[in-house]
Image (cartoon, rainbow, N blue to C red; front, side, top):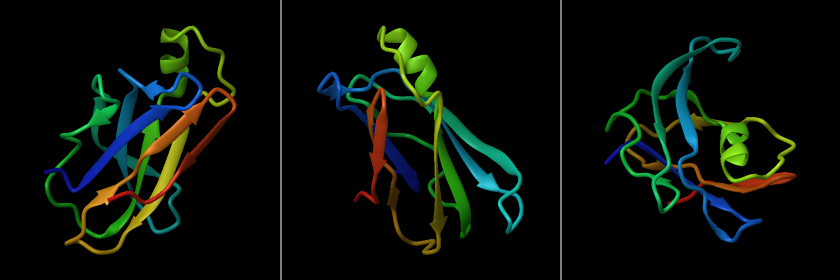
Length: 114
């Protein structure tokens, strides 16, 4: 299993958000001013990315970037946020990190999943 996983639910449509482009990036420096790509994928029909990056990552700051503009265009919705970036601290190298996104055209929320 990937060290980091994600899924996206579309709260406005009441369904999984399919085919959302998603990137996982690692901070290059402690100030988080520069990022390097780790992997990229698209959500499946269940809104999930089951194989998202390596099984192990070193501790550090990471971010999951969701291309919501592409998703909203594909679903004929006009969104306010063209991109959602969730930055998190991967402090425990042995723990699994699940970073979900609950999305609608004018809001989003997230939490640390299991």
